[in-house]
Amino acid sequence: MSRRSESTAAPLFAVAAVSYATNCALGAAVAARLVDSSGFRWLHHALYIATCVSVAAAVCTGLVGKGAREAGRRAALALMPAAVPLTAIAFVRARTRRHPLIALSAAPFIAAGLVGSRQDSHRK
Image (cartoon, rainbow, N blue to C red; front, side):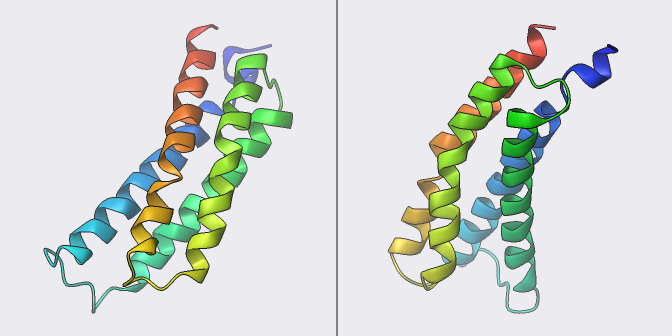
């Protein structure tokens, strides 16, 4: 097997983490009124969709992707609980206290998945 085909999940975990962090930063900036998103409110929604899709892709690839390794599986299992707050956030109004709290509750799982995926890529 070539090095490239051994693990394809690690970049997906990075994409999920960057997408999530960018979306949180944008949401925090809007909440703090540092940014007026009235002209591009769609961006927050697009980043949310990108986060959900990349989390799902990372989990699926980590679990059953070509060349999935034990560390990749562990990273996928660590990331999987992030699906709960990512799903719940769609049903909570943006200007409530619960919105950022629910959004931030995904952070430990996204961080754990990213760290786990990095450990997988360093073991090659």
